[in-house]
Image 1 (tube, rainbow, N blue to C red):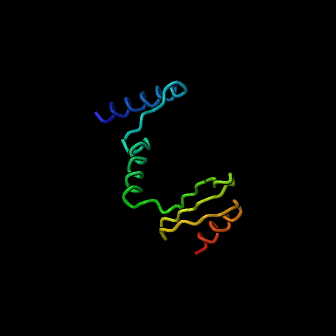
Image 2: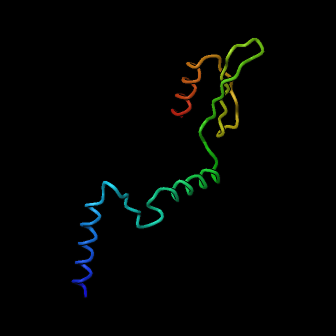
Image 3: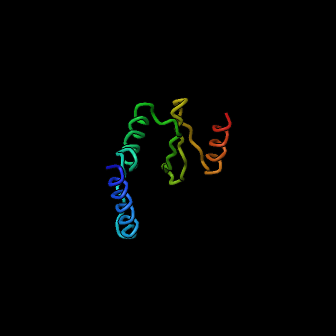
Length: 96
């Protein structure tokens, strides 16, 4: 009986190899397709919060652009007038 199973398995493997350019194999376990992992990762991120800073480009009343950076770790916002200042702030933040 084990020999029959192995022969069937080899035949199925051979057929799948012949059809591989046309058929995408299905994952054997639901977690392998990545969909459940993405859902889980989003759930964990929602529960723990996102520690990444949020950067928003805004415009003042005179039409000048500026950047507002919100740091969820310190719960503070800072405004910068140039993108270079934002880069410096980010580099310093990640060095801490």
